Length: 241
Image 1: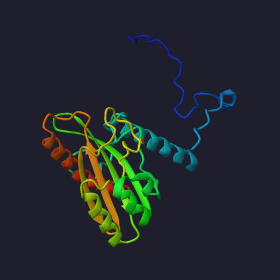
Image 2: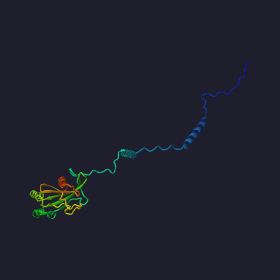
Image 3: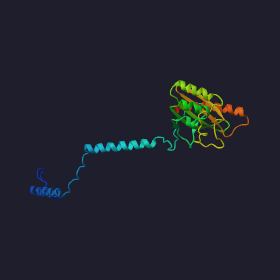
Image 4: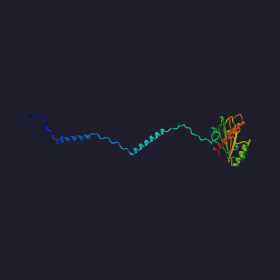
């Protein structure tokens, strides 16, 4: 007995096209039209020019320098500036506000007393330069020194002047307190304190020092003032000549 099986449509040949040729052409046309309506791709970023690179490098250098500066230890703006001191000695001398600069004169006779004044009248000096200083003693007392530099015409005249001023009662070059260029009450002169002198070629350095606060021992006070005057001679190197 023969069984009746269902009939299926015949299978298309493997070589038969899936779509007709005209359908494929339509599909290709549709795809081409869609691509024509797509938005254009974004423009590529511009390449860096040499100028841009250079500016970038400068920026990096500036930032690096700023960072280095910030990290450096800073010094206080009010850091005191060291002031040059005069040549070293036993005492520390400073000028006073009344006479911060030396004073000069070519008439030594007008600024001298006694036999020293008479000497200058017959043997004129070339120049007289005087400066005024103050210092502190070890006990805190103030002492004042008048430093005079007398420039004579030659070394022999300078020697004669120094020998004359070293003798008692022969007068001297006026100190700046006695000459009323400086006021240091109750002192009216420094001649009652201590004296020292030195010859430097044709120049003679004369120093007189005293303190308004004298001790009870007059001899000890005079000795101390002479020590101050002897130390103050070195100050003439800063303004003499």
